Length: 449
Image (tube, rainbow, N blue to C red; front, side, top):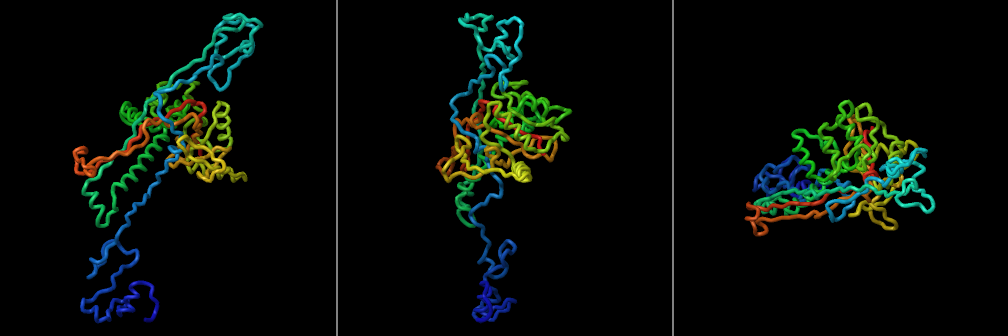
């Protein structure tokens, strides 16, 4: 044999005298008529090759099904999970005196006569905040000693049911085992539907407030939205933001009738200065012209406001575009974001010291920055980048009544009558709901360019 042999076709040509042009010189093969080697060109058109040997070869597809979709669920993974043990919780909504702000509201001392109501007012006189004379008499206004009491309220919620059903026939299961099938079709569907079940729950957690706005009947949309987990966007908002979103001369990003639906959470309604208000930075307004450039000052002010309010953000959820903008902003000033190792657990994101586990993430002021592919942007300007959610996972959690379970029944289990068909039906089901015990410790930055 002479020449180079690079393919099976070359080997056949050298061995049997079959030229590359299709002429055949081997007498043993001529008895079968003119034929070529059993091969086909690489990257050829799909389908069987033509000729006598067409039935000997057919293109096959691997059993593995590769996902071509992004199914990240980072928001769901970083939120703490706790067992659902009660249908609500009690919160301290107002101090015994001094208001419900981040710090005591104190006014100047006064020569005015003191009355009992002033000892418990939201704005305290500086000369009557607890200092009493020696041997003070109980229940005496002039001595500044009268009964005080904080204000408590209750928040309540119930678990939401998230379920996804799928089905496959007996014939489909059997045919997948032969020919060019994928084998166990149930295993493949379980994997893909399981990813979808998690992906949808992640989307519920970052559902923008704009999607709470009705497009048809108000009650229909509200009922459907209330069946899903309460979004982080509905938890981390404020009265001022909701009003601005529905302002016709401003953002007008939600329908005015939606105000009540968004403001109502855990059985209570937000109002100005409410304990349900989170720290929200959206700038001067939500018009397209009012979108502002991301600056370190905007982020630093949010972190400062959260700490003044008694919060301690454990994680910042944002999109990849915002991460890139922040990285460009820091590196342009010859600064670099630090990196930290974290581990997402059932109790939320936590740091790990001295253990080679977890994964590396960027941090800002030692707060992990977690990218969420589904993170939306709030603002009328189409150029707005993804929002930033500053989450204190000590006070936000997913209250789980029943963790994700898989159910299946049907003909493969000997019970076609249970599903009413010659096949199987299956579903994933999770019962849980979001909870929050301290709203002022949560923050959000929106309307960024």
